[in-house]
Image (cartoon, rainbow, N blue to C red):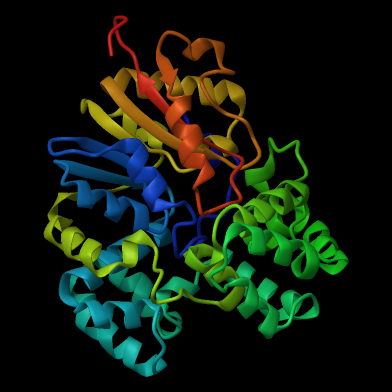
Length: 375
């Protein structure tokens, strides 16, 4: 089976995401990783793949077509391996400091990289000075929004007010009275349109099967995140609006106690260049846990069904799959070919979706593999 994303000529020559924009805690709750598990996931920026190590599995296989994304995860692995926690936060760009000092730290890290990754980062030394958390195309998209668009909608003072710790009723009142202005709605309609997000944020090929208005969907989801959830505790909203995380409310991947567990298990990570389809065609492994990001968003329903069939072949009975839908609906309940092979755990995934702090996804899906009628 061929990779549709590869066939569609998506540009994989750049770092598209330098951070994972999927809530790690939701993912880990869904997969319930245990000792002995064989885990497989989309590498992306590496944060969620590495966080899977905190469950102490036997093995975590990270797959990606993009060489820059794989170079990024390898750099993060070496940084975690040799740096202190304080140095790591600085190197990634979570804490401020001198650009040259970050490049100096890279010189300590580079010898542990393979030749391909070392060449990539030697060529991109200057970007390391920014802090590698900030160099992805998607992160630059949010930087453009924050610096060029948001100031015309809300002042820094109002942004700080939004991020204050408030009870639900006060959050709702603040949103309705002070935040959700005509300018805010107009900005969403333009800046978060399918065209602009495809041009500046993701890739236009990722929207091949999109039928919904992304801006309208994201506006509705942002209201949920700013009212139903508490933005004061949401690291992803903090990053979008201020350019960095609140050190008191870091994502799961960046917390000291989790970095310690990740460091102890780094030897369990296997990095694979290629597509998920290609890997599954050439492995005899039986996999327990699948972190599939939002890859089904980018493929036709026919190819989604084919890939789900292939995953079924290589999965253990009772294996769990977790993935997100942005605006393209993909799950076994709408896929007749998946019936009898998968059971959607909607009672679990719906509750997790309600607390998902990466608010822009319209659905979160957990599927359980059913073989011979037994789970």
